[in-house]
Length: 116
Image (cartoon, rainbow, N blue to C red; front, side, top):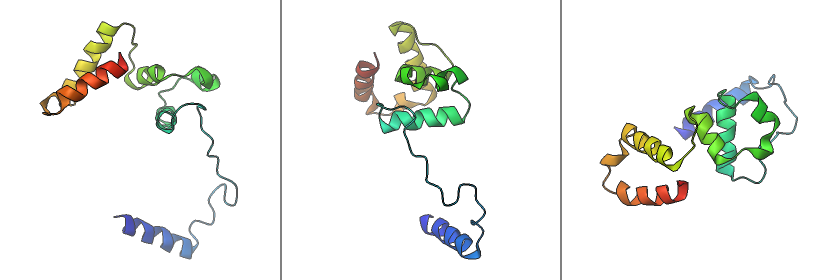
């Protein structure tokens, strides 16, 4: 599949179909949106922001965004106490049918320790 995509891009370049793109010849803006956070967290933020899940007031004050905030934006629910978090985690596990996996119980303990 990768080769097919590469061929299509190469054909478009040769035909000049990509010459009119906005920003041609300009530098790419690759700066992290959330400096100090991991690449994965930055990517999660960008995805949620582009999908419209991140409120406008958060985009102005990016320095205070945490992984907890991103989780709340993604689920649309507020996470207050450990009991509620555990309940929501269990619902997520059942919804994704992760509890059917034989190796998941040991991994579950590691996740619970990390999250809570």
